[in-house]
Length: 143
Image (cartoon, rainbow, N blue to C red; front, side, top):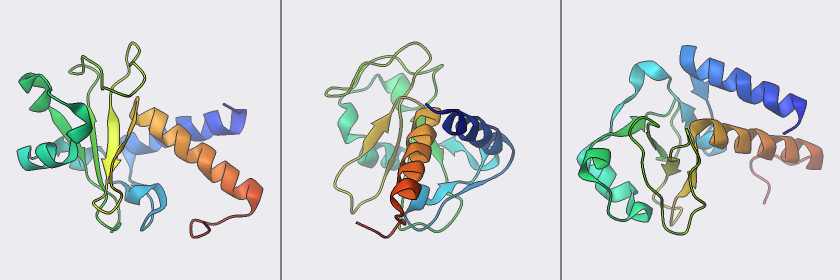
């Protein structure tokens, strides 16, 4: 990770703990509303948005965290399982290291979900993607 990317990731993590992390309609999947709006996910949401996880321990299943988006964003939903509660692996995904936990967002028109190894991992990947877009002179709307 480059110095600028690392700085952006550190700043994004700090922003998430204090304020809102705004995205756009698709950009950053709408962002996150901040810690004041975090709650446990509704059981129906867990059933609908965790098909990649297979059979989870019911104790973990009941502690999925919902992270509301900061702006209207084409129905994206964000979820994570805290590192204190996560144990296990997900078939077809690289193993989770110490302190890592699943973070994912989902939208009904995407046909699937991507799972990152932490919220920080997702933010870093988005920063890297934005840097690549800038280098190539692209916008969110370019193919």
